[in-house]
Length: 360
Image 1 (cartoon, one colour):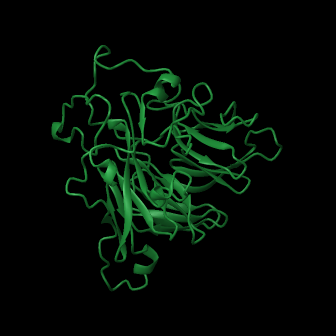
Image 2: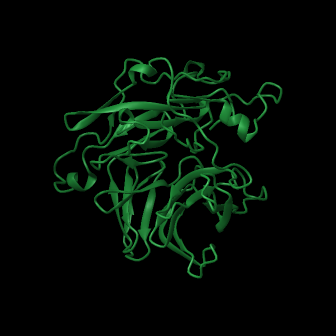
């Protein structure tokens, strides 16, 4: 049996489709231990609790450093500031397992006072942090675990919508850091280079050490990732998974040729938007036809290992928070792009689902 610690699934799922419920209509929240027991996983796998409150509070993104420490982005100030009056209160915490038992037992506030942070990526001796309108680099130089260097490396990302902000930084095989636009974009200025780029309708890629920034093909809401070949993937709350086969820098080589649409829809099953929750379906007051359909896709991941078993290698996993589950797509090459299908044993079920309506 493979053992896997299935991490707390985090993402900024758009919850606009769910009806506001009276307290007695919504099941009460569970304890962390009860929450783990509510999970339904594939045979041969199991979920383990590795961190919970008070070590983590309101997490929206995570990243591991090469030392095994876990960087956690916490949006504690959503939706109206930490004091209810727009005071920034987001923070980055670093979690450590000090006794080697596989559970985190120490949490250090690395950086606080951030306005609605949406992403973190371990970088150099510190971390890159998405906190629109900025991407910040922060570093601890004196060894106390807290950032004493805080430097804005990019500025100009849109702030109009908390659920559509810059996020999803990922270091790709071409030595660029790619990121998700968040949907709205902005005119981005690299502070070191002084150059500006408008990323309206596109994602972006950066070289943080030099301040270089370029547009990247595709438009992603939450979480832009790549596979072992460097293929770029993203999506939005209504779209499970898209592939961006033609790089923006390639199409810019000839400005006189209109390039094809940058995004290819990956899932190919007949009803690819249908999902199979284990939790009770909550009544919707708008678009009732969207119940048990994709409405909050986010937190995309391409599994680039074989610990879970070879059948999972190269698969895509997408969070669907409104329906309390993680969906799996088996990916295969399809010409210059990629096609996705449900696994044969997931035709009417999901890779991971919870009976808990609070599971995100």
